[in-house]
Image (cartoon, rainbow, N blue to C red; front, side, top):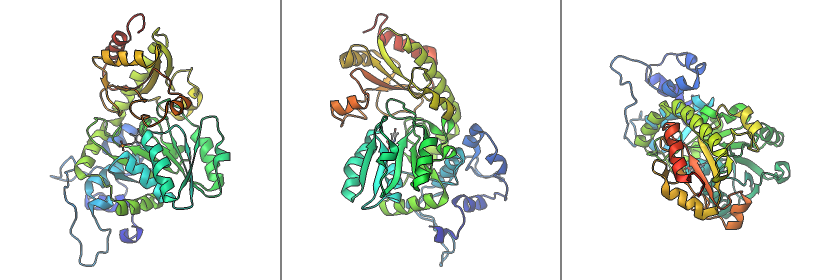
Length: 410
Ligand SMILES: *Cc1c(COP(=O)(O)O)cnc(C)c1O
């Protein structure tokens, strides 16, 4: 890729084509996250140019007979829609480069495959998205990659081996919203020369920019907050250009590219990311405080509450505690199912990060393939519900929760 690109960075050529002058991006680099979300990666103003990136549904692009510049091809992630949205994500993460792919799982898989091969070893947190656990436990071993999962009381240092080529964590984690101290983990990783990969889907770059704390690569499911409207499946990685180039090689070989129309939807969603996430942070914090005193609730898991085991680390690392919140309903799974049945506004659906508030029971969704013992070991007790708070009015959400939980509990 580097060879094909003639040494230039992905964004440079696109910028040149859109008539950007050198230095045009400088004010943007110093701007705040809301401004970046709106303007980064967009076309520079030019007479009669469309304000919004047009959808370029073209699989390929004209070449010179002997190509001297990077070859544009939609499977390579170099379609204009893919590039514009990747530039926006890179700007939001403070990364040198980014790449968008067809799903969050494609982002996780390609990122890992860029670092590990047969004979290598991966260390990952035990608390991960279910799909990522399947990738680590079912697929990587078939390729000759060994995996060690680390629980929250186990030692990262002890899990690392001579063959360890990647460390993977999620911040905050699913569904207990644990916040591992990535500064400490980055220090260990750096000492051993191992890249630290952080899936920051739950945080978004508005609440956390892992690269600022020493991580080497950020992974996102764009399906969640980045897209933000539950209407697009997408994934992204952001980090140093050499790493992104390597992941692009995997994208070229394995082929899970993002469709240009989906890239366009992702770009549109990203423009309102800061506004949405700020409201979701506010809603979840307000509801967390209210739920903590509710008679029907046994436990509230929310990093913004002082009762959360990682509250201090979360306060240091995060700009907002996020829209994700989990509870344990008194009365176990039966009671939790009754609550689900009574919701009027809150929608029962897996997934997260959209404008609408969703609730799910991890035992039937993200952790359906775990055994009851595994679920309990992960802290997913009977009666566990996971909420993704949307952008509705907090009072309406509270009222719906109140009627669903019942005044005296369930
Ligand atoms: C949803 C999710 C994924 C997978 O993303 P898809 O876009 O559904 O493939 C990966 N990691 C986390 C933390 C997620 O929430």
